[in-house]
Length: 343
Image 1 (spheres, helix red, strand yellow):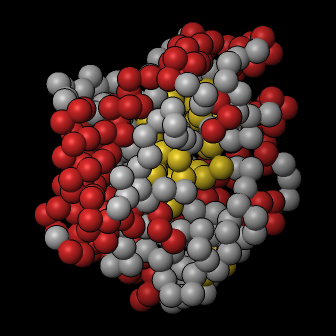
Image 2 (tube, rainbow, N blue to C red; image 1 turned 180 degrees about the vertical axis):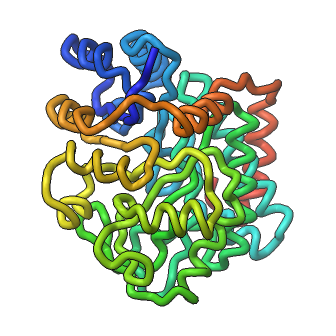
C-alpha cells in the first residue's frame, strides 16, 4: 500500500484513539520520537510497535540522538553520549583513536536504538561552524575543518549502519555560517560562493549517504528569495548538482519559525513548497494532531524516484545487525574517551 511523503513527530508516550485513527488513514512514511515520547525502554519498544501497527507497514521510526545537547534519550534510563565535537577533539590528538571512537560511539548508539525498534537517527551533523556564527551548531559539529568533519561523519554513519540504523546527514547545504537559529528566525547567509564551497565539501564527500536533511536558510549567493528547503534552485543546482547528492532528501521541521518568516501560508503550503522544490519527504514535528492533519494535506504519495530512494533507506533501517558485544564495546569506548572526560 502507498505511503505519504511525510515523517510525523510523536511527543506522547503512547497512542490515543484519535492519533491511531489518523495514522491509519494518513499512512506517513515514517515517524520521529521526541523527548516526551521516550520514558523507558519498555515503553519506547511498545510505542514503536503501536506506530507500525497503526499505519499497517514497517515504518521507519527516527529519533534525534546526536549526543550532547541533542539527545532525546536521557539519563538515567539511557547512556549519555558526548557531542560530536568530542570526537573532533580526540581526533586532533590521535587521528585513529578519534575515528574509532566516532564509529564505536555510534555503533553503541545504534545497538541501543535498534533494541527498542528505533531504526533511524537524524545524525550525523556535517555543518562546519564559521567564526561568529550562531551557537545552534557549536559542539554539534565534529570540527571546523571540512575534511575532518567528513572523515568523522563517515565513521559515525558506518557505526549506525553496522547496527542496522539508517542515518541522515544534515543540514544540507550547510548551517555553519548562520547568524541565527532557524528554530526562531530565518537565517540569511551572505557569504560568497568561494566560502560556501568549503561548507558543502563534507556533504560532497558523503554524497553517497542514504538520506540528507535540508537547511531552512537563505543563501544570497544561490537564491536570495527562498530558504534552501523551498528553493528548487538550491536543491537542483547545489544539492543535486554540485554536491552530487541523489538519495533521499528530507526537509527540516516545517514547524520551525524560519519558514514562518520565509513564506505565507500554513503547514500545508510549507509542505507543498518543500516537496515542489525537490524534497522527497517533509518533517512535521509538533505532535499536534491538527497540525499533522494540515501537513498531510500538502503531501503526496511517494512514488517514482522518491520511492526508489525510500526503499534504499528502508533497506538499511531493516538490516539485521551482526553479533555485537555491547559490554566490550562500552569498555573500549570509555578507554578511548577517558582523557576527554566525556563518558
